[in-house]
Structure formats: structure tokens, C-alpha cells
Amino acid sequence: MASFHVRSVSLPKSSHPLTFAVKEQLCQLRTTEQATSSTSICKNLSGLKDLYECVEDFLSTQDGKCLDTVLDGYIMLLDVCSIIKDVLSQLKQSVQELQSSIRRRSNEVSEYMISRKKITKVIRKCLADIKNNKNNETEVSLLTEVEATTLAVFESLLSFVSAPKENKSLISKLLLTKRVAHKCDEENSEVMKVDSAVKSLAKGIEVNNLQKTLGALEMTLEDLEVALETVFRCLIRNRVSLLNIN
Image (cartoon, rainbow, N blue to C red; front, side, top):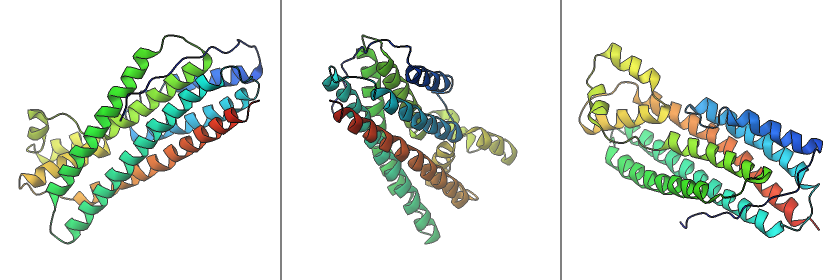
């Protein structure tokens, strides 16, 4: 995947109510854009939907002088969004396949771990490209602020589903007493709970209620998919609105 690069665009400043509406949505998102829980991330994706609905109205007040430059930004965001959609879909499929293998008592853990590594590689590449894109931004305007906030929300989502780095503390957690392990479980995301459980299976350690943990992650991924699809459609509608500007 090629690195993303966006040419900034400065649109005329305006006291138009639609401008204030966009700024208000931006302010609300900025306070939580680096969310770490699935619930907060879904809420932020819903906030992006509201933001782009305001942006669509805002675009109707603009002319077509900077059309090509603005479109570049939307193409980049749609590209990132498509990658994340694929990541969520592939991860959910891996979870479902592991669930099925456990029901068959075949416990095909190695296949899940291989798939997880491939997905994580894609995630880290996308995160690096997002970071590079942020560094390339040289001019601030209302729409570049929208892009930056959108990328921050996307970044938090990718970080949420990314595999944690290996360390001794992660392995040691699997050997703690049931009480301490339960406490650690509550502090981890659905993704990390599954990763820890799968690694313990690979080491021959029995894990109770793994199917329940996998089921919780599957539901989380489905919620994220639905919320992200809504944002994706808003981005497409915004792009269509731009193309229709005379």
C-alpha cells in the first residue's frame, strides 16, 4: 500500500452557521478521538458520521476552485477506511474459524496466530502511513482539521485491534491465580483477552470460557464494522457532493 499524501486546501473563512456546526462537531470529537475501548471508538465513529453530515451541508456553500485538492483528501480517507474495513472483516473471519475449530475440538490455534500476524502487519503499515500523512500536513483549514480528526479516530481503531508487542509480563499474566487473572481480564480489551487466551492454548494451558471470550470479540467487531460502514458511506456522499459542485 502506498503512503498517503494530502495537499492541504484553505477555504474562505466564514461566519456561516454551517461552519460553526462543523467546528462544534470537531470540538466534541477532539476530546475523545484517542479512545481505547470499543464502546468509545464506536461512539467516535458515530460522531464522525454526524461530522460528515455537517461537512456535506458546508460543502454546498463552497465553489469549485479547489475541487481537485479537496477530492484528494477524500480519496485518501476512503482508502484508509477501506483498509480498516478489510482488517475488521479478516479478523472477524479468523475469530469465527477458531470458534468452529474449538467446537470440533481440533483447536487450530496456529492458523489463528498466523492470520493474526498477517493482519497486524497490515495494521502497522497503515498506522505508519497515517503518521506520515500527519507529518506532511503544512497548512491548517477547516477541512484539513476534519481530515486530521478523522485519521485520529481511525488510528485509535487500528490500535485497538492491533496485536500487543510480546513481553514477559503478558505470558506471566497467564500463570497468575484465578482471582488476579480475572482482574487483569477486566482491564484488557476484547482483542487482548482473545490474544492472551489463544497464546495460553498454544502453550498447552487450558482456558475456560474461551468460546465466550471469542463470542464477545466477534460482537465487538460486528459493532465496529457497522459503525465504520456508516462513516464510509458518509465519505462517499461527501465526495459525490464535491463532484457535483459547479
